[in-house]
Image (tube, rainbow, N blue to C red; front, side, top):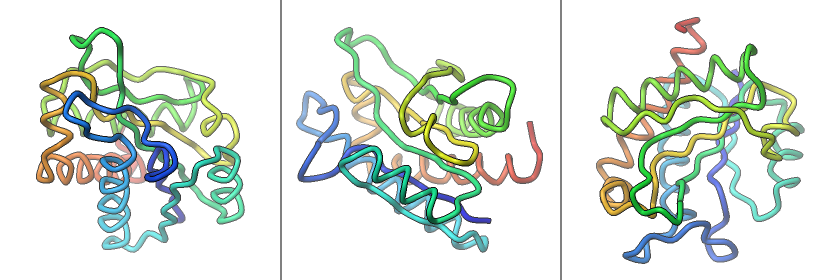
Length: 176
């Protein structure tokens, strides 16, 4: 099984969303990406970690790798600082992307107790331009003070990573 894990944005070039404390999305998701990849390698998966500035570089690299699954990891942000929780996106409902999104969403919400914002569809470039089932995970809202505390905590970031890895293994095991 070949799996691409993408940390959204690119440290040093594109910070992504930034929390009130200065916490940068690109830095948070890089660490989560690395941990997810490590957990998946521990169970024998061949994993590509990719965190590039240009979206086409991400999808082209994953497609050349021949990924069977693609997971992009992000932190959400909103003008309304009360917005919080986890949501996972797929390109369309009814397919393997939705199944994978559901498995990851359930694991994160059940493990970390984040607000369940559900599985949603979007035409995000990385979902539309990968050659395999693809999802984009919004861990939590970096713009929300409570969620930012979760994202800033190294132990909680590890829990997010473990939950994503378990969601992937649930999907591979046919758990729905």
